[in-house]
Length: 256
Image 1 (tube, rainbow, N blue to C red):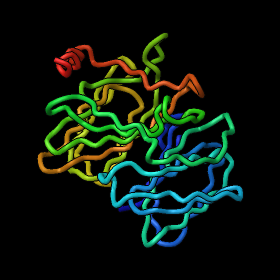
Image 2 (image 1 turned 45 degrees about the vertical axis):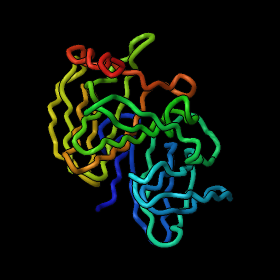
Image 3 (image 1 turned 120 degrees about the horizontal axis):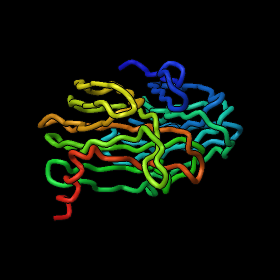
Image 4 (image 1 turned 135 degrees about the vertical axis):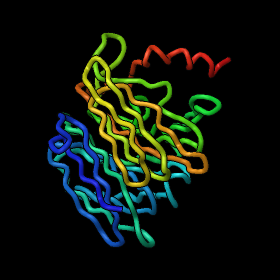
């Protein structure tokens, strides 16, 4: 599985990025203009920056439960060291304007949410949602979709700023497990038409448009990491979205 290195420049937008790295010894990177998170996908590691070090107790794989993680401020030099073998990490990033401290996020504190019902049931780990963890712009959540189920359903978008509602975001989907399928289609913000088979290591970039469903093939659980960033910052960060009005009624059936 090749390492990923997505920056705002390579994505053709302004804010969101994602790196992945696999290492048995150590791995170093710098954040320059970006804030970042270090999230173990498998294995554990230490993360050291500015003379401080945290141990990130990871997991066997992304389906085993939440992981410890760390927040890295912009302008940092970071050294990761694998613990007891090999480690794989995801490093979500966002172009930042505020300098926040290097700090640790405990897996025990990660909010876990069950969303949907029936064949639209899935599990969210909201480790870097607005209410769970402070950043400048960066937002990130993990989603587990059981085999045969659909998530990102009903389809939704966050590509325009609406007062008191939807907030525009650039979004990255990074997948493990699978295979599955990802759908993205046009909104008033622009034309886009994606129906792609996805599996471990694949990425879909969503600059605008309705996205959903994410479909897990029967027998194959699907994981994705969502990385989001937009103009809103600090306490104003929001993951507010708008459903495709053709399918919004489906949410009402979950509590029926």
